[in-house]
Image 1 (cartoon, rainbow, N blue to C red):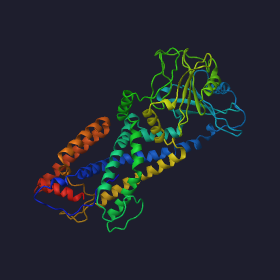
Image 2 (cartoon, one colour; image 1 turned 30 degrees about the vertical axis):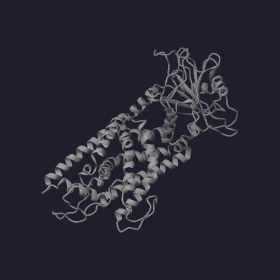
Image 3 (cartoon, rainbow, N blue to C red; image 1 turned 90 degrees about the horizontal axis):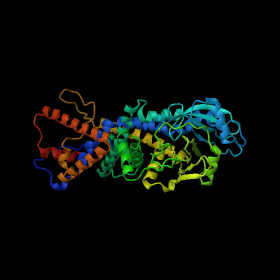
Image 4 (cartoon, rainbow, N blue to C red; image 1 turned 180 degrees about the vertical axis):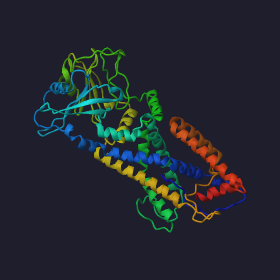
Length: 504
């Protein structure tokens, strides 16, 4: 990702247009890259900083909420129904039970707590009240708000919402969608400029973070910037693509495309009266029901109970960590899900009849459509959980790299400023923009291809299309202002040759 353009060479003013063999899209890429990076980089930097914070959110959550997450005693675990009773006693009889996440065996030491989740009126916002129970003693260790399928607690939820929308609600999501939309475009454009530009110092483009001898301070900055961008390219593309899946506008198009192509995430039947399961999004709750009327409230753990449902799931091959959803309504089933998002992913799901403890439906992660699995892996990778600590460290370093590239890009823009005083005796306070007329250096066929791609991508990623249109309008306005101040406008041939000379 390069936020500036190669050092301008001396202007030349030929009287004829360049031959067809010199046609190139490079000047157009330079100008697009310049405006996109200068204007969008602040959004990308904010997304990188907040994303870097989220990379350390999971270990921070374990530290801050250690009292709730860690059991206070060791020994054989009580039956899950007994742990649910302890949680119920703490919250009262009014709140409906939603699900239980039993603690993993502690292997003789002090392990984790069981999480019992209740509906306190915020399930529409993917929030539940989580009560943490010591599995050995039944002691309630605390109560916290749990968010989403990942079960994030207040610290991680706060950081997640900061990254997603800056705590500004739905309007704030536009910032993160704008950053995700442009990150991949700016990164790819920067790669093109870095690898197609001339090598004046004779060194390898793959040499990262190593100062190269050069008389030009700007070229030394560019060397660091381009090398770092090359090494970070794959990570930036992954962040851009996976980030768009959560976005407001592009995310809707992604979801519609997946459903149209049959790439949705399958779900088990959770209602015995329904004809079959319903599709759901990645990491969605398995709560689809055939009856849209208000379901009948049932007792906690009806029929075979949570222990019976867990035993049936174990016989079906499921292993921890697990979540057991409470049956909803008189014909509802237990839905037992594997919740291990680390590699290799374990996300098998079974539906258990409360009456006899028989498995009535199952969905194996291995049977998901390939694109659904790729989407799930992409989300887990973006959240920093797919590869555990390694994932988190790599994404933290990637966030630092993006910030460094943005800062060095602005530094190159500053170093590009003219150092000679103008007619008013002052020097420019900012760097020069790339020369206008970049489109004249490209062939008509190439321009037509660029227009088609821009329209298609702009429709699928609306914020990218709208902001690109804004850049074009801004460019036209600035051009008219510049021409009105010029004594003699340059000819088309002169402008074209100057653009080509500058981008060499």
